[in-house]
Amino acid sequence: MYTLYYSPGAASLVVHWLLIETSARHELRKLDLQAGDHKRPEYLALNPVGVVPTLLVDGEPLSEAAAIVLYLADAHPSFGLAPEVGSIERGRYYQWLLYLANTLQPAFRTWFYPAEAAGETNADAARDLARQRIEACWDRIEGHLEKRGPYLLGAAASAADFHLTMLMRWSRNMPRPATQWPQLDALAQRMKARPSFRTLYDREGLTEWA
Image (cartoon, rainbow, N blue to C red; front, side, top):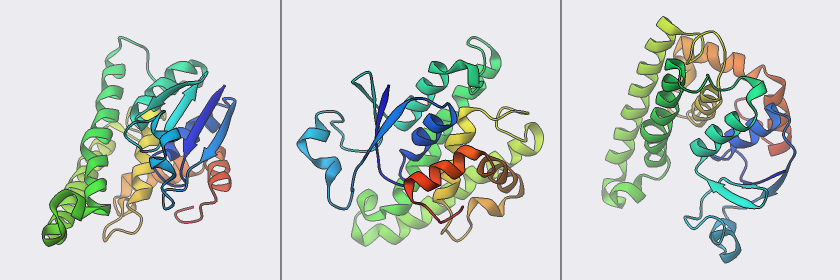
């Protein structure tokens, strides 16, 4: 039994999506980030950094979206969301998930909160640099999909594609959203066609990028 602390559309989205995709038994606890629910003592006791998501696994907390993605794919192997342990494809799976988590996702943090990274006087420059970094990531992934697609690991979707789709959604209001890259757009359309995506949107009350 899982308990997910989440906020609609935030980094918890991919965890919620995988819980639905794998039909895992779970309950949801919504956090109002504007009200500061993620900074309250009871939540900080579970997640000292005070961010979402946090997933309770039999009462034990796990944090960091990419780590939870890796865990859920392994905990539900019958859904085929991760390659065989020890295979080269498993290595590529780790490679892409860590690239998304360590290179692309931090650039989004700067895009959304530029003053946090560089101070108010440098916020515009920081945001522009973040945009360039995000678009460079799209260029790299697009080139990979052209050669090795249609998904990050080839013919079938893995948990890494779920994480990628969440980050593509975050770009929806940027000057060049990810869907302006043809291969990325095609991947997004395939992922959004999954029944679990519609259920996810219904439960989180999301409408943009449907």
